[in-house]
Image (cartoon, rainbow, N blue to C red; front, side):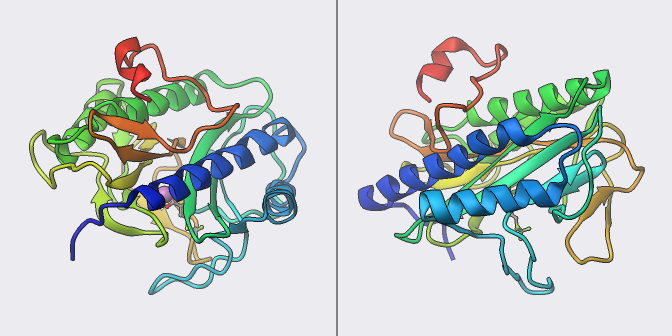
Amino acid sequence: MSISIKTPEEIEGMRIAGRLGSEVLDYITPFVKVGVTTGELDRLCHEYMVKVQGTVPAPLNYAPPGYPPFPKAVCTSVNDVICHGIPGDKVLKDGDSVNIDVTVITKDGYHGDNSRMFLVGKPKLQARRLSEVTYECMWLGISKVKPGAHLGDIGHAIQQHAEKNGFSVVREFCGHGIGKVFHEEPQVLHYGHPGTGEELVPGMIFTIEPMINAGAREIKEMPDGWTIKTRDRSLSAQWEHMILVTETGYEVLTVSAGTPPPPAIVLAKDAVAA
Ligand code: MF3
Ligand code: CO
Ligand code: CO
């Protein structure tokens, strides 16, 4: 097994998928308010994908080995939920933080996978700090991407920044290669050592999606077979982009009108490459 190098045609297909995935997050943003249920957010995203975009939600009925089919169109992970939260009758309340993770499949079969954090009502200080630091972690990882760099460079940059701020990096879930397949090689760990792991080559496409906990890094699996929480019930945050390795650096594929800009911590000269 090895990491696939995408053809120019595949890259163009993934640019379209990435934009559509990002546009679902743009669309749902004004609905993420006090009083809405996660099930309603799922219903709205699902309808937008199918009826407006002509895309299909990749999570719906997704069933990797050992997992029951995922029952909804998107993941909604609230407060101490790290990832894979199942939308339902949970009502968002003032001060909650929620990650919405969207993966579309385009008519040509390409996956567009990305997620953002939303702070509901008046944000609590710790939730805002955690979301901001996690966003910086994702971008510090992205800014390492260029031919000749190694996967470990990405993980190291993320881990350093998270731990410097007193937070911890979830180990059990990672970024992943993606294309016509939802999850493929490589695994993109959000911790590690510089110069280790696979060397990056132009045409690789993978996600960077750090999950950062305010407390300890350990996880707890819920009986629904999907939902992952922090073992100590501390807050968790996650951001996700899909990245292409270019000849000179990187291109963020999950980009649309509403994509938040890179954080100040990533140098402006780096951001131009996006
Ligand atoms: N979108 C998630 C990721 O970033 C995967 C969700 S799988 C699901 O890889 F089945 F839970 F939706
Ligand atoms: Co992903
Ligand atoms: Co995702």
